[in-house]
Length: 353
Image (cartoon, rainbow, N blue to C red; front, side, top):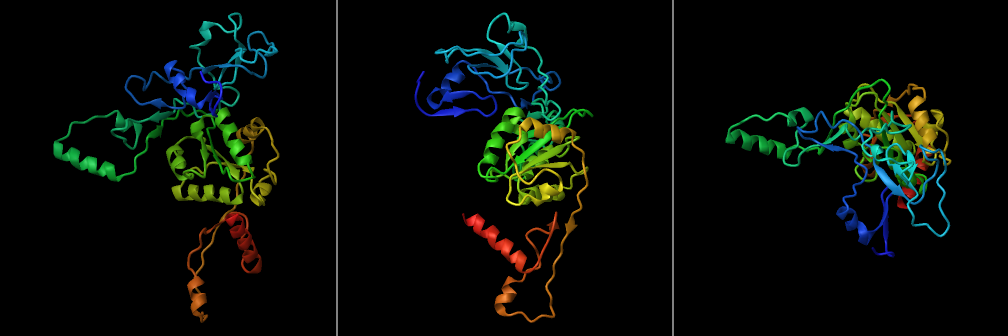
C-alpha cells in the first residue's frame, strides 16, 4: 500500500486511509459504522439489534474494559495495533486474546453513555430506489393493479418529492433523541470542528450541516419521533431560522431547543443561560445539559406591518416600502430607526466579507 499521498479521515469511525488505498477497504470488506438499515421483509422485525462496530486502533485513550489497564504505545512501534474499540459505545480492549475474545464480535451494543440521545441505526430505514412511498408500512403492501392505474400512479409519484429514508422509532420514556444543526461558518472555525465531533459521538444521520441543505428536510423526516430534542450550534439568526421552520411545519408538541452560542451577539443564548459564547466546553458536558436540563418557555411574537396610505411617498421611497418582512417572528427584540439601520449595515458588511 502507498505510504505517501493525500489522506482521508472518516468522522464517523475515525479511520484514516490514503486516498489511493480506499479500494483496499472494499477488498477486505471493511464497512464504516452502519447508520441505517435497508427495508426488506427479511430484516423488518428481526434486525432490530445494534451490534458493535469494532475497529483496530494504533492509538487509544482510556483503559481496557477487561484488564482495566491503559493502552501504552511502544517506542519505535507506532504501526502496531494496540487496541480494538467500538465506534458506537467507545468501549476498548487490548488487542490480545486475553482481553478481546471472539464472543465480543456479535455481542449487542448499548450505544454507550449517550444512548438516550443517539438515534439508533435500526430506526432509520432506507427505502428501495425503484419506488419510494410516503411511509414504511406502505412499502410492505403490494396490491395488483391494472396497467392503466399503474401508469397514472407512476406519474403522480414522479411529480411528488420522494424521501429515501423513513423513521421507525420505538418510543421509550428514557430515550430523548437529539437532532443537531450546526452552522459551520459560525464562531470562526468552531462550527466545523463541532460538526465532526458530534458525528463521532452520535449517529452521523442525526447531525446536519446547515450550509448544505438547511433544516427543513431533516425536520420533516424526524417530526414524528417522540421526545425529540434539538441542539443548534450558531448565532441568534441560526436559532431563529430553526424556530421558524418548526413553526412552518407545525410541530406538536414543540421540541425543546438547546443552543451552542457560536454567533457574534448570542443574546438569545444569554437569556436562556447557554452563555455568551462557546469556550471549548467538552461535548459530553453539553450532551448532559441537553439530556437533563430543565425546559423553560420562551415568549415569541408575530410582527405584522402595513403601508401607511396617508403619507405621500416619493418614487424612491415607494419602491423601498414593503408590506412583508423577511422574518415576521420576534424571538428576543425588535427595533426601528437609526439603531436598526446600524445593525443592518453591520450584518450586510459581514456578509460581504
